[in-house]
Image (tube, rainbow, N blue to C red; front, side, top):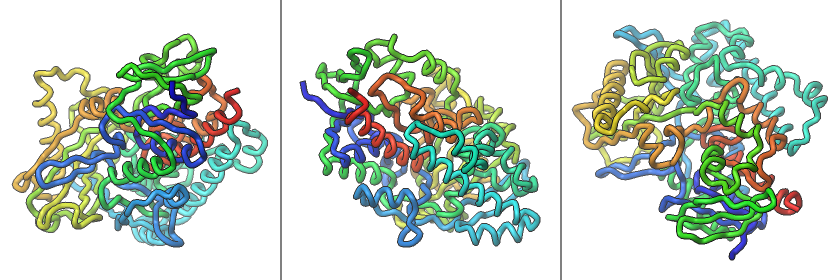
Length: 512
């Protein structure tokens, strides 16, 4: 039986990055992926003459030259090459209901430009915004300290050297912005990104939201020229160059243990492979409930933890290939957040169902960042909303297509009414992806593409703080959107990289 140091279950973002770094560190690595290509959510598909990105809107922290960000440096260090293009502005945020527009503001990238805009539209919030950026630095230093501890954290160091980190990590994003002394208008504007987390501003943890918004504002956003699948392929190809083996169209059906430790996997074709460690891109409940050969090994705390957690963003997207240019349609921005109200609590409550009475949706036009992403005189526009509950559980098989079309129709109507876009008359291609679609394609519970929800008690800082202290089955590691750094492309790549170092330590020492 062939043996590996590490077997990665699933070629999603986290799994690919873990495999790449582990291979660079000299480990013998095998990636097993049930699909016929890598990437998970980081993929694309073609309809007619349009190629759509399945999930990616934008990634922070790439940059070039002196502006090269953390993620860019990580890719450089691993030798991963992919062409990225900058997005001009952070976002446009429009709040409109019943024909009345409450808010319409466009936020730029770059701290200086952000501060200039704040001085113009919220002059009394300049000092509060400076405190926001200072807090982001404190949070970054605190998280950096946790990452360097490898589970051996000194509480005195945290209290004495990172006091602001400790204060912020217990707050919700809404409470944090209020604590900075921001006006309600400024808080409303900075709340635009909340749909990226799939939970309201007074539930999502401050540390995750702060780092996400700061990343976009300071370092800008980028998109791969050839869709997110080019990212997946680039990482997989580099991992293969470093010696990593890949098995596609194969599924792990059993995780094997011996003497209380991970020892191997069994595939759907009957083959078995020995291994010292496993990095799972599959959710913990799938591994513990379906794959593990000895369920008595699961620590009780692990079961309590996954039962207490809530799933994050369940996506619904309408992919539109339009037979007119962005100018003809009236599109001027790459990312536009469109809401019926500024109150994220109200929208989150409504988003547990498919009522659509109150909504927050995103309109993303790839042409504004990659002009030649579609044939000349055409447009790629993707409309997306998030569900905060299992809103599709009551839809029967017979009613599924009708329900899907009704929601898609509402999203198109919202965009046309709020933005004045001319959409329906120009639809050449349309593809509708509900949470059911994502669940089927990715194997994620309820179609969640954002792992577990980022909550005050279970946010990025608290998970990072607990990483290494909450032990699961020896040799079993989890990567992906449900990992310690939570969801999103950047956190998934960075946490996958960090996990590879933890695995290296286990394989070379801790496994004995």
